[in-house]
Length: 258
Image (tube, rainbow, N blue to C red; front, side):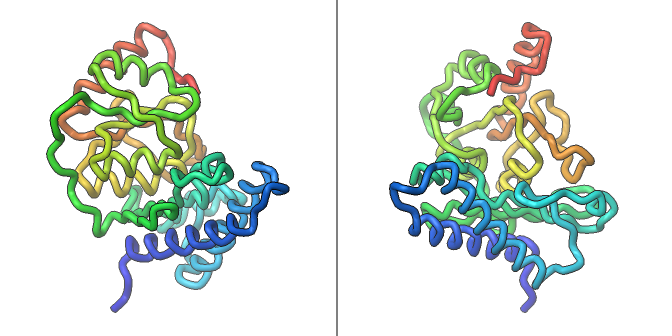
């Protein structure tokens, strides 16, 4: 039986993850962090490109690690790829990095998969389970391990939330999908490939996903820059968006903070 687009996305993400793990086994102390990231990016990009060329030679591609082409803007189907989301975490030997493979068609994300190879986990939009009921305790917000954007602090304060540091964007959104945290708010600058696949999976799980002003996340746009997003439990979305709106008014700007 022919695989669905989501199943293909999942298998490609898994294959790229295996290539990344294989590449990391070749590193030793003489390999600098930057070179580790570069090798990983190249290995994952090569594997995904090979699979796409074999399975979907007529489809267009938007990838962080490949030259962009205006041809995708008139294509019916566009794969949006981040071969290695969380280069720093990968280079450090951590597990909180991911591979993103999404498909855009007809103006919408129609399939997506996020692989977290360090956990031998792949989430895809066909098979992901709906998010269950939230347990007791404070709202849990995923944040960057380095410097969270200012808008996240406003949400934390407004909700009395607990901050949970973790790695890449895909891992953070996957944590919302898995019920490990309740929300991820970002306003520090991202690109379409940073969020396309995890947003496709999050929506399939019944979560809210939008820009921080509540407007839709638009993919396969001319400019790949897509700097902010909110992914959260649906019951939290109105309050989170309200808090963010108030923060943006007080800042007189976008709330971007890294």
